[in-house]
Length: 80
Image (tube, rainbow, N blue to C red; front, side, top):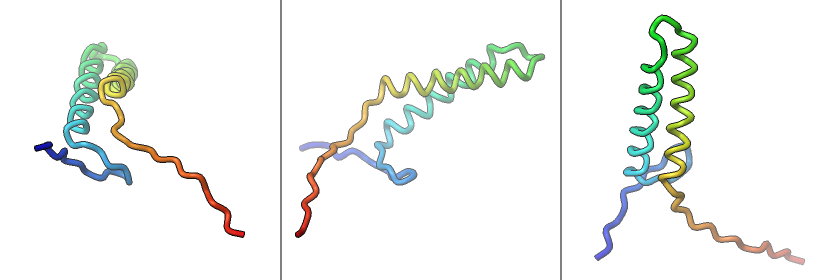
C-alpha cells in the first residue's frame, strides 16, 4: 500500500510538510551560521553575512528539494 504524503497549503501553493521543514532547517542553519561567522563588533558585516547565509540556504534547498507538480497544458477552444 502506498503511503500518502502529508501536504499543507501556504500562500496558495500546496507543499509537502517534510520538504517545508527541511528547507526551513537548512535556511536557518546557514543564515545563523554565517551570521555568527561575522565579526561581533560590526553590525553591518553581521547583516551582510546573515543575508549571504540566507541566499546560500535558499540555493541549497532548491537543489535538494525538487518540485512535485504535475502541469497539464490544454489548448483553448474558441466557440463560434
